Amino acid sequence: MKSFLLLLLLTCSTYAQSEYPQDYFRHPLDIPLVLAGTFGELRSTHFHAGLDIKTQQKQGLKVYAASEGYVSRIKVSHFGYGKAVYITHPNGYTTVYGHLKKFSKRLEDYIKLCQYEKESFEVEMFPGVDEIIIEPNEVIAYSGNTGSSGGPHLHFEIRDNQERPMNPLLFGMEVKDSKPPYVSAIFAYPKDDQSTINGKNERVALRLIPNKTGDYEVEKIKAHGTIGFGVVSNDKLDLAPNNNGVSNIQTFFNGNKSLEVDFKRFSFEEAKHINRYVDYDYYKSKKSKIQKLFIEKNNPLTLFKNTYDNGYVFVEDSTSSVYKMRIRDYHNNETWVTIPVKGELETIVRDSLDISKKSLVYSDKETTLTSGFITVNFYRNTLYDDEYLDFNVSSDTLFLGEDRIAMQKNFYINYDLSHYKEDHQDKLFIARFYGNYKKPYYVSSTRKGNILSARSKSLGTFALATDTVPPTITPINFQNKKWISKYRYLKVKITDDLSGISKYRATVNGKWILMEYDYKTNTLTHDFNDNIVNDTKNELKIIVTDNVGNSSTFEATFFRK
Image (cartoon, rainbow, N blue to C red):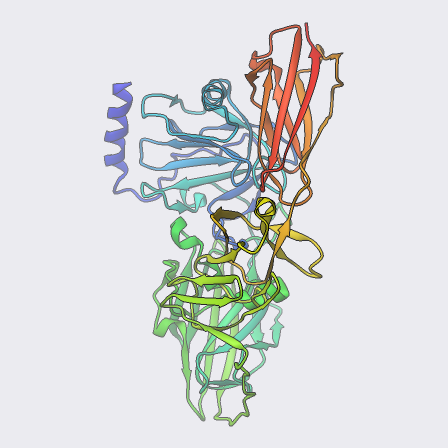
């Protein structure tokens, strides 16, 4: 064990000066590398931190360690990466394998011991450097669909020694890609109220003209003042139909570089600021992500490089200019967009914004909004910009406008419940309503005294809701007082129609048993191979509790030889 630690230290120093070793990491599956998702891809709340590797629509494929090392972390959770393994390697990098169906036997034995000790399906462990040594080409797990996965695949990451994810393709892994990125839409933005684009002082969609070479031109625009541009662009690989992310975008104004966006590496702390990078208002209304190729205030992303004037360009009256975008995928297939710009000073009539019924919320200091028994706290740096927000209260319903403004952090909603009967307070939760407002959706709520609080990163409509109905528990593959000797698994369905499942606990003959919870199928599953259930006659007891404390108890007797 000491020799492995010495090797780790020596190899780390050897590789410290060598960026992106090309022959160190192997492909973690033994099938062709076909991707469903690429590094840096734009997701709804973050930049994608790895590669989503297709598993031929199957689960249970062998997952190999990308290289030798030691298991530095194992996590099992209902959401996120589901079942995941983290391996730290002698060269200082860490590889991550997520959405696994199950671990290899020795890892499975290790994690199940932890789960039974903690009496919890969800666990997170950090083994020591000499505790679980991984050999080259060792099978560490089997691919699956656990956590927040939308279908069977392997999520694979490579992180540097500061836990920053990097594009695994930088390390010599190859995918077939001969197709250049494609462009769906181009937009122009005025920076301030003195700037105009085609006679308007607002975001303007530009007419995109594909040409025979695969590049694009944009119909000449008239502009004046300081403006920026945005693009909707994706990439497709040769062997998959998925719309993937691009790798690099460069912009030029009259031949001079204006800005570069480079998706090689980022930190998880900055990844949450994706909604400052994309046009959040447009995404929420049109379900399409415009990448803004200019840097607004409170944008901390390190993806930007070689910027001049934060990517904005200044257009003078009576001038002719050319703005260009160069969009590349990882394999340097590239697409160009050319935008001719005519400088023309125009006088426009602006519609006045009625702010008389709106509330000003500051970005750089705390703002508290109160009406009746409802208080909303926006702490410092919750918003990116100062904003005039809708704030209306009707009875116990809070209207905070539409979800069209990006937030840096959560804001907090507080209800004073002192006017409710005490025995009724326990069943209340804060709900968010979508669309036609018919169904309440639980927002994680906590109560301290008479104050019920919830946090949210999205504006919208909120209200108090009551949940008095306990969860339901239904056996799937067994019946009370029946023999189930031939079954390897014990399966139960649990559901809750309103506030949602909070926790569950299962015992057999008074002893806790591990039951894996799959929220996608509402299923609890116990594996009899755990060898916890060894008696012939067994008394099963399952208690399921929802998010406001309603609980149900299911009891049954089963027999096994």
